[in-house]
Length: 293
Image 1 (cartoon, rainbow, N blue to C red):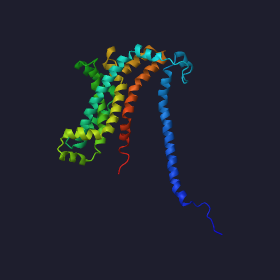
Image 2 (tube, rainbow, N blue to C red):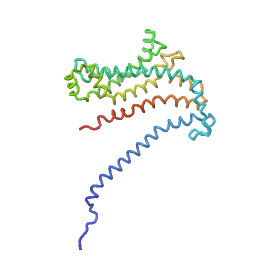
Image 3 (cartoon, one colour):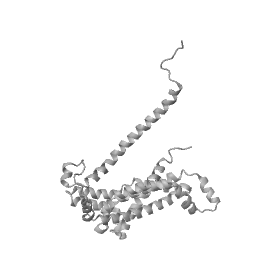
Image 4 (spheres, one colour):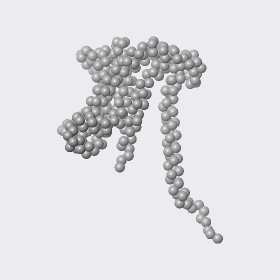
């Protein structure tokens, strides 16, 4: 009679065991990411729902669904708080600042990462040091400087500080990304007769799309939500940006919670659209250095 060994795993069980563990780990990661996504998305969803409520309904049930959907809250927020003017000003300032910052940062990062010259490291350290300067410590000097230049209450007076304070993080990200490119690419281009700027425009920039998407999103969010410089440098109502408009709106209509939520909901739409448009490149940039070989 053949003897059987109890408790000894077969070859199939040995093969399936690691696979089952991998599946369970992936399921656990997906569940945690799903919960994390819900936690981050819930405040936006809560704000969106409350933008359709009246003050009485908001006080009675701040976490429930609206009984009566008041779409006129959006009309009130748009017309009374002059969000059309604030939106236009924010778009002009944010878009122009992002374009100039990304282009200048990409050009500077190209020379700092691909060329070796005497003061290269010192210049890179100088730009990185700018990330440590607190914005609020420069408000008074910036106000005096813009006053002397005659740039108070102008779009340019906001664009210049936005460019200056976003350049350090832009250069830091792009230099780290461009430094990983192999030198063979540029050598082949030089052999084909390409100049420095042709290599930068036709080869380096297309390869840097993931990092460019990252800095575009970061710069746009910083410019779109910036409040301190806009408060100090802009006094004219026709030139105020969206954060200033929302602050005035909240102070003037402290009891109209539905209209406030409607204004905040409309304010976050551009940032969400920018992220959705560049999300694919952003993910590639975050995972570019995760796997090698």
